[in-house]
Amino acid sequence: MKCILRLLSILMAVLVPSVGWTAIVDEPKLSAPSVPPRSPAHTLTHVELKQSGEQATVLISGDGRLSYRVRPLGTDRVIVDLLNVSTKLTHAFEFNDRIVRQIRIGQHPNVLRLVIDLRQAAIYSVEEGTTTLSIVLASRADTKKSSETAVLSKPSQELLGSRAEDRVAGLAVPASMQVQPPRAQPTALESESEPRPRQDTRTRAVDRRVVAQPTTQSTTERYVAVFGGASLSQSFTNVHGVGEDSSIKFSNLDLKGTGIGGLKLGFSPSTAKWMAIETELFYASPHIKQQNITATGTTSSTDAFPGVHIRMATWAFNWILRYPGEWVQPYVGAGLGIFWGRISDSPSSSDTSPGLNALAGLRVKMGEHLVLFSEYKYNRASFDFSNADFHVLYQAHYVVGGLGWSF
Figure 1: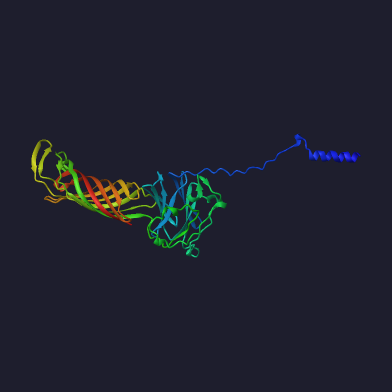
Figure 2: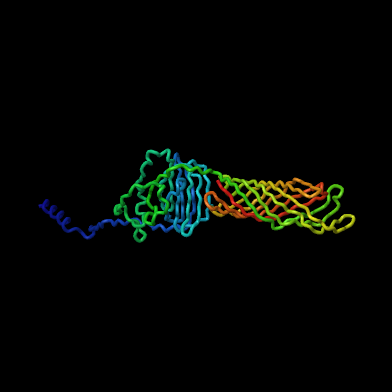
C-alpha cells in the first residue's frame, strides 16, 4: 500500500508540477554584429614603401575608404588614381629600391594621381584594406614562370562585400550570400592606354598584371639648356682712378642696353629633388654711352665722354632651390661668378674678377624631357681697368628665356 502511495505521489509531481518550479527557456537570438559603414576618403594621409625580400609594397593610406583605379602607363610606370581625394603631402618621393625609383603625386580635377616609376620589369597586385591600398610589386625576372599568365589570388574574408554592388544601405552582405562572377584572363598591358570604366574600379582584393620591359630612366635628373634675353638696366658705379689717381672720383657711367645669350648645364640629385647644382656661361656687350662725366679731386671738372665698347663674359656656378612640382617648378638661386670684362677702345684694358650671380625663375616641363623656363638675373662685380686708369663696380639686371632638355 505504501509503495502504491509513493508511486502516485511521484506521478502527480511529474504530471502537475508546482508553479514555483516552472521555467521557460527561450532560444537565444543571434544578432549579426554591427559593421559600421566605411565613409569615403577625402584626404590622402600617408604614402610608404615597404621592402620585403624580392617584393616592394607601396602602402597608400587615407582618412576613409579609397575609391581608385589602377593601370599601367607604357612599360615603366603604374598609375593609381584616387577619386575625390586631395593631399598636402610632398609631390615627389625618391626611393633607394631596386624596383621602385620614385612616386610622384599630382592633383587633377576630382582625381589625385600617383605615378609609380619603376626601375625594372615587374608585376603588380592590388590589395585593399579598410582605409588603405597596397600596390605589391615583384621583379619580373624573379617571377618569370608564374607571370606567363595572370595570377588571381583569393580575396581575404575581411574584404568580402567591399564591392559597391554587394553593399546595401551601408551594411556588408554576408559572404555566404555573395556571388563572385568569373574573371577573364587579363590581356597584355601594352594595349591598355585609357582608364577602365567605373564598374572596373579596383576594389577587389588582388589584381595582378605584368609590366613587360625594364625602364632606362636615370635616378638623377640632368639637364642642358640654352637661353637668351636683354638687359633691364646696368651701370658702372663707384668709379675712381687707380694707382696714383685713386683719389680722383668720377660720376657714375651709364651703360647701353644689350642682349645676352648663354648655355647652362646642371643636375638635380635623386635624394634632393628640391635643389639643383648648375654651371652656366653667358656673354653680353654693355657699351658705355656717350655722356658727360664729372671728375672730383683737388678740383672738379665736367667733360664730354665719347663712350667706349665693353665686352663682358661670365662663367657662374649656381646652387638652385626649387619647388619639386610635377610640371611647374619655380626656383631661386645664387652662386659665384667669374667675370671677364674688356674695354676694346684705345687704350684697351681687361680684368677678371669674382662676383655675384643671382637668379630667380619659373621652369615648366612640356613633356618627359622638354623644359621651358623664364629667368631674372642679377650680376655684380668690381673691375680695375689699369690701362684705362679707373676702377668700376659693375651691376646689371637681365631677363632671359630658354629651352632645356632634361634626361
